[in-house]
Length: 475
Image (cartoon, rainbow, N blue to C red; front, top):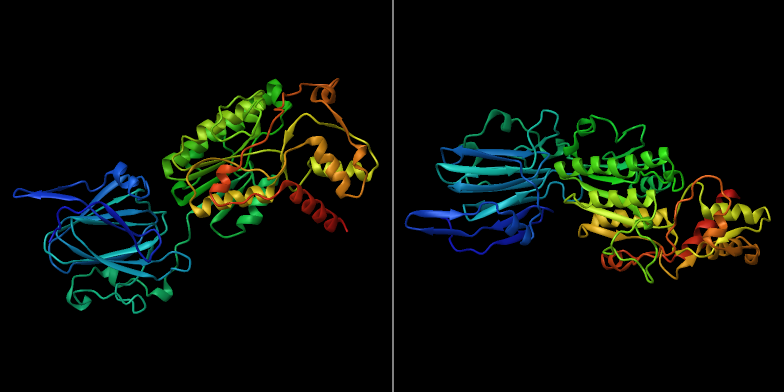
């Protein structure tokens, strides 16, 4: 019997992501009405905005019609328009909850959100039951499915009507037992820019699980005309864009300007379209160069973009287009140091060779080590932090490039006073070719990422650990 007058309420179940929902149903002598899916209200109540693309109805004449257990590679919003069902759901995804069972009766005043990879089945409890479901992908012969036998002894579902007494299709009768089910892997993660220093740190953080892919430009060029069909994008849950054009000075040339806009703006726009259309979370790595560096204190995520040069302008454009994706993390960082050639290793090499360098002393910021940047990205993805823009750098007292150079000299056993401060103008005076403008203040506020539960490492301590690891590798 349909219950009228319920308040909209969402209840978690033992299966992660499987959400039971009480629906308000309004009725009188003429019948009843309900909002079966109302995006604004239901998202506000705590349901994910899962982006349905198709509505299906399965009409069942008789009591006891039994269907399942099917785990499809999409999310389903299950309810009934008329009648009543006993529903049974079994987690068939890889992980600790594989095999977990949840059951409930569903009538017009109750619905359930079934996440991708959770096996779905039901048995009708009334004649003329209309079973309805919204899905967020179209059927494809290339999609990966998993099935479980309705009579599986491990799941041990307590069907209200014994299976020997009900109508079951030949296909459903032939499904395997739980021990023979191939668990459904997570949606794929694609890391772009896998050959760069952040890409290598992301590989170390994410590992080589089968569902994680690493791609260089040779593997997947964002310029290709068929990018939208280059992958079955519905199989992907996350794209991490660690690729970028970073030749700051060359970006001021005609050829560099074109390359920077292509990689940092047009490429991000292509990814944003794919992510938005396929329900993918887009992680886009950005830069302090989206600001002009004239602010007196640390830049927050909400400060207006004011890039100075072409590189900064293209990164700002990429930021803006990335934020159009419903599920996005724009991660702004500064002064990145990782595996490969970088400022810290250059200074260490100069110190070892007895060189007394002139280093810019009027640009202020904090170092960011790629291990930490990768850790923050993984944190945002695994904790389900609110989507948006996050600053991620090392913590602690801001330094100038000259201060960092002196710290490198000191930590490698050399005289810090060998480093001489110069202004930006003095450093680039007489240099051949274009010189891009640099922000003088690159300090980024870390309040938002800290509030999300991630603690940045002190940049000075990280520098010391980085140099110690380099020395250990060399010895």
